[in-house]
Length: 91
Image 1 (cartoon, helix red, strand yellow):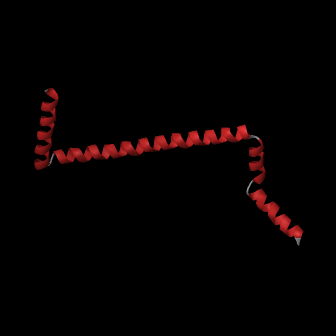
Image 2 (cartoon, one colour):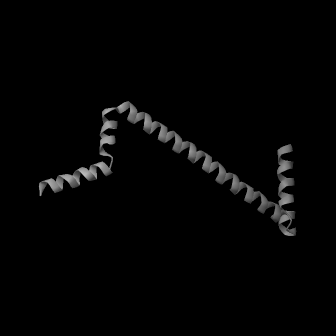
Image 3 (cartoon, helix red, strand yellow):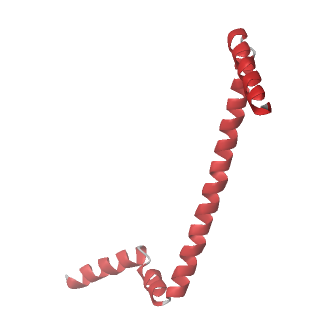
């Protein structure tokens, strides 16, 4: 009975790669290095992903703004706003 339990525990530990984890704990610099590389890759992926998302959002907003400028009421309002800002900047 105990042998069966021990065999099950041993199989579970092998599935969980417990030996690799213990080896990393015995070599802390390797553990830190692997985590440093993983964090760097995660940060780089996040930065690139957010850049792509923001570029897409800005692209969509610019195209929406172009279509709103062509609307007569909003177009004249935006033109007046641009003239006001330009006049304020020149002062």
